[in-house]
Amino acid sequence: TYLIDEINTTRPAADGLIGTSPALQQVRQRIAQVAGTDATVLITGETGTGKEVVARALHHASPRQGRALVKINCAALPAQLIESELFGHEKGAFTGAVERRIGKFELADGGTIFLDEVGELPLDLQAKLLRVLQEKEFERLGGNRVLHTDARVLAATNRVLEEEVRAGRFRADLYYRLNVFPIQLAPLRERPQDIAPLVQHYLVSLSKRLARPARPIRPADLAALQAYAWPGNIRELEHVLEQAIIISQGAWLEFGGFAATPVLRALPPAPVASELAATVPATTTDGPIKTLREHERDHILAALHRTGGRVSGTQGAAAMLDINPKTLEARMKKLGIRRTVVAG
Image 1 (cartoon, one colour):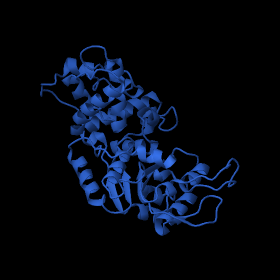
Image 2: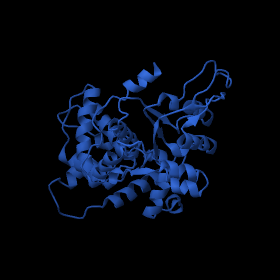
Image 3: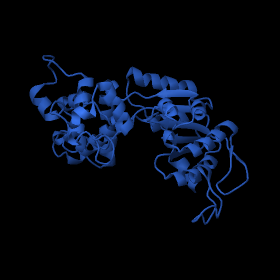
Image 4: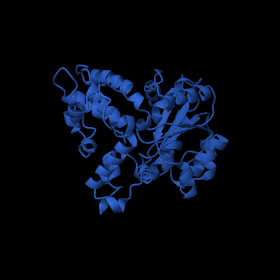
């Protein structure tokens, strides 16, 4: 039944990639180039950019589309459980192993396995994954029978694996095996022209799921969404729209001054929809407008001020912005933000 459930949750659909930006068109082109092959694909991009959507698009455009697409999030499980999830285990392999378990690579035989957040794998399991990629074989945990798999491997990460290799946290040989055909997803702040079609898509789909009327969005509010840097990318946009749909009562979509989410409460007033509507009419072209880079810098600084300069941890700026701490540190470096200045 597990295999049937996996197949039922991966029914073919549209590619799921919403937008017309050059960056997204390039992603579509890369998918079309590699989908018909069995090449290993490494999908990279910040948290929330849609890496799983790309993996599903690749699978559904491939000759394996009628077989299972099996996903495992390598960051969501304790290290001691990942091996059992990937390769399965025999009865009695460890305390609590009361019966044999089939692993993800067996379930994906003939289909596709999607290794999300592959950069989080511990080094010992990286070696075992490398063997599967090279030899197409493995053993269940606690077993000695060699099993073979014909699973196409798609992997994704929000880490910069070249840096992880240099730091000794990721095997170079595994990186080269995974990076056969890379697909890089641009963050939403670099493709603001995709925000309008994304908003339209989510207003329809979320309103239906929440059993709420599909209210239209004011032009000034859409302009505010397009001006925001979206450090959490598409996932953050979806959550903001979901909250707006829930709180809306009138004829138009209501954002409540963007106060529904902690990250937006921390922002300077420039991107707030109500103030934009009052001070910057959607039809005007007069006056200076901040660049997306300036908006992003303001948003990160606001979050850092809120946290006293702390980046990581549950009370850190990265958690507030819903992004990986390493991603935030990289953006801070690029934008010239120093923690000592913020905290002091």
